[in-house]
Image 1: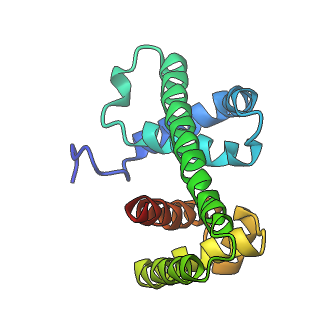
Image 2: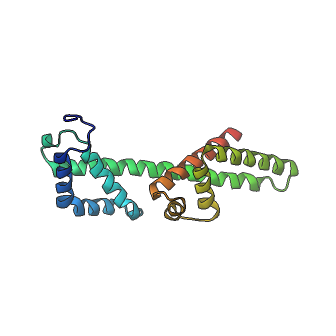
Image 3: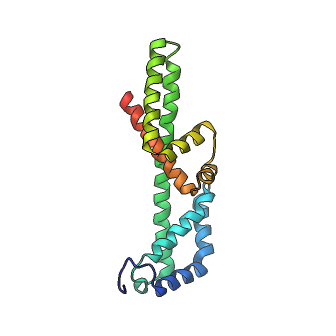
Amino acid sequence: MPGDPFNLDTNSSRQFVVAMEEDHGRALRRFLAARMRHASADVGDLVQEVFLRLLRIPDHESIRNPRAYLYTIASHVLHQYTLRQAAMAQVVAPLDIGADIAASADGDPAAVAQLEEQFEEIDRGLEQLSPRAYATLLMYRYEGATLEQIGQRLGVSRAMARKYLVKAMTYCQQRLQEMQ
């Protein structure tokens, strides 16, 4: 349907994005890589997100300075990525609290039994949450697998493996907070 702002199949939009990628793709990758010192593996995903957002613009002819607009989108994508990374770092820390709690039982049989019961409850909840999220957490925490390795084993992208991990860790964090 012509004029549909959600129709991503228009030739002019595709041509515009292809031209932008040809003209600015390398510089955009360098721009993002320079700002993502520790996560260079994610640069390709962010570049793809930038161009997808550019493709979704219904009226690209109205953009006065396409290069500046491209970098504005890239800055927004990078900012959202940074926020997600910070949120994930906050989610990872509470899982270590569980080990601290278990260590604080100091051989008290009643405390150890209660902890085992609580962790079994968390485990059952994780299994019901999502089998892939559960498997991702196990591979990450107990096998030390990277997100790339987990993604390959599950047949999903690194970004999807990260989403599964965040989902499982968020669940664990919430349950641990409820138990305290």
